[in-house]
Image (cartoon, rainbow, N blue to C red):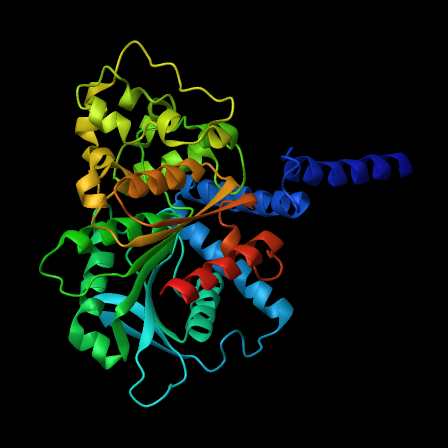
Length: 418
């Protein structure tokens, strides 16, 4: 009996460790914490997929529910204090029918105009919320530290809507906020308004910045754009960073492909085809040399980031029907990196944060290079020990030192440039 108990104890101890452990690069400073975070994401996704398979609703709804439950447990564990920016006033309202949460700092001097940031949260166009603790905390801190009005946009998500609805929500909220009357109502200086976002929110922020910059009907333009590890293209899933970080938590390559297909309303069976880059093979008629040059990481990336990686060898047969069946793959509203240089040249100066251990690193670096080539001033902020999502992982129990550093630098840049 004692032997059976010993064996059972060893098995029950070894199985969780086996599930959690994965080899990670030496450059990551808190590997076990990231392993636990990654395992938590995997477990949540697997449970959600199982419940969906059993007929108990959509898996995305379950993931949202699990995330909300875990956040509630975290808050209960640390207690509910006043939180960051205790003097910030928070209100929920709508901008042109789009739900937003507005953060206003304590009143300043008489007639003093303030900065403003329109913030778009990440989450693969399917997850995340302005009410989530990480985004609520970030918005409060920005409002407090920058003495800024922060508008966090609750754009609609998959599966409730598909592209281009999330983009159109963000654009509508942006145009409404940029109107002189609304800026005046919130006491905002029209020359000091930023658009910002992380991951999928960085994608939306870049796309909205492009559209507003080129729209003559919008009299007030964004003065800066601040993009945090943005996702910007879906033509090459074999860039150097996709190769290097293909299995890195919390965002691995196949998950990013799934997020893209969900957002664009495409058949999930296309995952293997996109992973093999068959959809953008050189034989595809739509892949003109000019278009390919806009995502050519072998030219747009410096040797430091290309490293020893090589482009994926093209398949002999191109999947011509994919680009026609999923036109969003070539739509600059979904893939801002594909925009023409003339449009990029109209965009505001930029801050682009990238992380070494992130499949999206090269998206951000290529966009920085293309903006610079178009004449836009760009500040590139790269973290050699960073990973995707780190900037929002700054509170217990998912707090990372690199995330706190990145958040401080991001807010400092806004302080100096907005």
